[in-house]
Image (cartoon, rainbow, N blue to C red; front, side):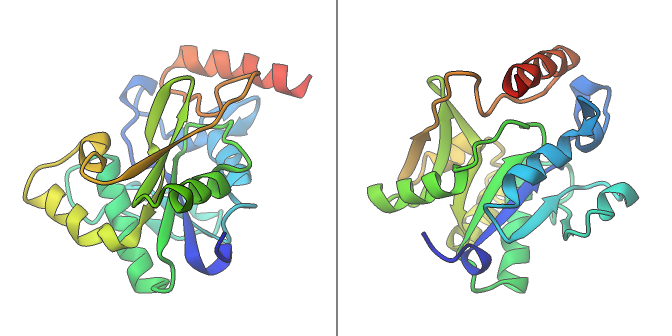
Length: 209
């Protein structure tokens, strides 16, 4: 495992429009009285010393966390790949010694504590170019470990090819799919609608008990 403070930048992806949640900013949707953003930040902070927020919204409340906020460098809300590109660009400029970024979405409050270590170990063991997380037989392409060396390839895919789907782009590379199994809940359960929020409240009670 490399030194986390210099080699891997953690990224909370919060650049989406959240149409199924009445266009609310998902960062501040409360789960048991605490914003979703804080659940994700608390999970990521012990794993990465440098954490960025990818958000296209000028938000004073988000700024109070005193973390760098990186907007998409490409116009038009092009999806998570555009956020990943923008963070790679930030990392190249501000932390050129960092060779990897770890991305997680803001709506996944139950992330595993060993997410980074297992993804990195998976890349090293399989000699893969990048890694994504899996659970319950399903892949989660947006939860992944990305080498910044792919920045030029990604920029071309977005601007010249109109690429939008993460798994379509990553299929071009040798990717490791790392399983995370949890008997109690899916660690990558994400909140896309109000019904998901209700279920997350129930899952949280199960964990706390």
